[in-house]
Each structure stands twice: as structure tokens, then as C-alpha cells.
Image 1: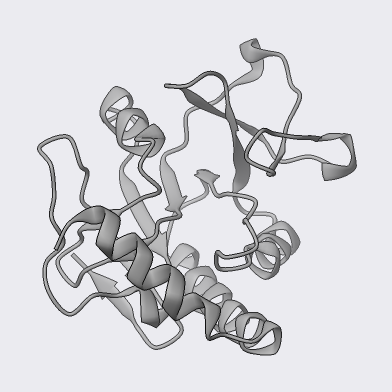
Image 2 (image 1 turned 90 degrees about the horizontal axis):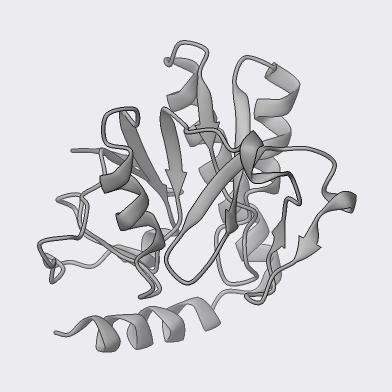
Amino acid sequence: MEKKEIRAIIRQRKKQLSQEERASLSLEIARRTYELLNDEKATKVALFLSMPDEVDTTPLIKLLSKQGKHTLLVPRVEDEHTIRFYKLRNTTDYQVSGYGILEPTDDVSEALVPEVMIVPGVAFDTCGGRVGRGKGYYDRYFELHSDVIRKKIAIAYQLQVMGEPLPMEPFDEHMDALVTEEKVYRF
């Protein structure tokens, strides 16, 4: 199966979820991810401000902010090839990007490189494979900062996990863990 087909299948599966189901599943995923991050020493953790069809990261951000152990970072798309991460601040000061995502407006000199990344994606397999939205931002970032990033943790609904290995290109990065509402996969 090609990545385009996989994206279409997952898009259809996600449409079956009600808002209530999304909220409930996102809360469970946040709880499991929080527990996983509890084992990490204090560090810079990148996460993302979710799009409507993604796991809602708001509960996870609230849990981690309340804990206060980690420095939380969120991405900004700089150009068609580059993302950078900045300290999470009051999002009322953020701007909506061309992708419809809230992004920080910090000066580029304030960008930080995370050591642990909470990663979005469209589809995953049980071997650490990931299919993103097709722009390659995260894969390029992983490669560029492989000396600093020590853990890549994907979060997704269980319905985003495919039963067979995903088609992976040489530049596609594998995840170290995947957290769904049902379980934590470690690779």
C-alpha cells in the first residue's frame, strides 16, 4: 500500500470518531504519555499544538505544565523545509499559521533543540514506522538534530495503527515509542 492510500484510510477512520470520543481518547493518551515522561529526567520536551483531526494535546500540556518538571517546546514552520521549536508560552500571543495551527512568534534566536519529542503523524505500525502528512518537516528535523534528540515518542489513536509494516523511505525516521489509548508500544 502506498502512503497516499494509507493517509486516505486513516482519514476515513478518524471521521468515525465523535467529539466526545476524541476527547476521551485524547485524555487517556495524555495520561499514558505523562506516565512515560515521568520516567524521564527533567529535560526539554517538544510537543505540538494539535490540529482538529489529531490527538488533542491540551490535556497533556496541562498535565506537564502543572508538574513543572520539563521545559515544554512547540514548533513553528519557518519555511517549506524547516521547523524550529520554542518555549511554550501563553498561546493568546501566537499567530495562526498557513496550516491553521497556532505558532509562537519568538525571535529565531530563541529556538531550542528538544531532547525528547512528542511527535504527530497520520499512521503508525508496531515496528516504530510512521507516516506523516507528507511534508517531511519532522524527519528532516530528526536527522539534523540526531546528536541531541534522544527519544521520539509518537502519540495517536489506536485506529491509526496499521496491522502491517508501513512503507518507509530511507529518510523516514522510526519512533522509539508510540502511545495510544490502549497501550504503549516501545521499539
